[in-house]
Image (cartoon, rainbow, N blue to C red):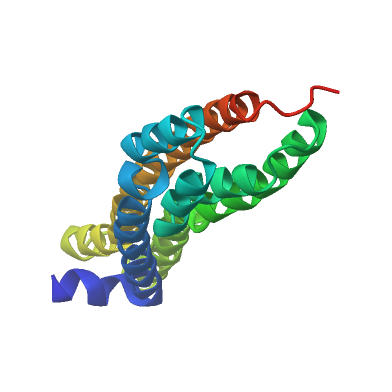
Length: 202
């Protein structure tokens, strides 16, 4: 392993740094995008039950106990109950955009890592091939073992780049889809609350 890393030069060290960042972000987003943290369905159902029963204060208290995206949105809806429906929707859309930005954070970084890692690997390979051709210019093509070793060394960075890029790309797409699904569900619950609170429909 040490030989593999040392042969890759500075590009390998950059890719190792990117892999550490990617793994850290994957663990962080996996933890932060759990349903229980973003959209706890049971809690939402309990808050809806309070509102249907006319216990708005109890619903507000239930929202204040948890610090999830859905609880914050519902708390704002409850605090602004009675305003026009159009105004309520604008308020919820604004806070919704803030929550989506919060859910989306760091995911773009994974996309960047997935995009640049193969390019860095290719750069390392090109640099390695240049060194191989320099050896050919000095030694000629008669030493097959020298050439094979040089080409193998040059390809190390491509392999490393793909090793970093593939998991990062999979995680990026997975988290992106997960956030989009959460956004749809949050919008559905928020709109239901707008109707539930019987705001003026003007």
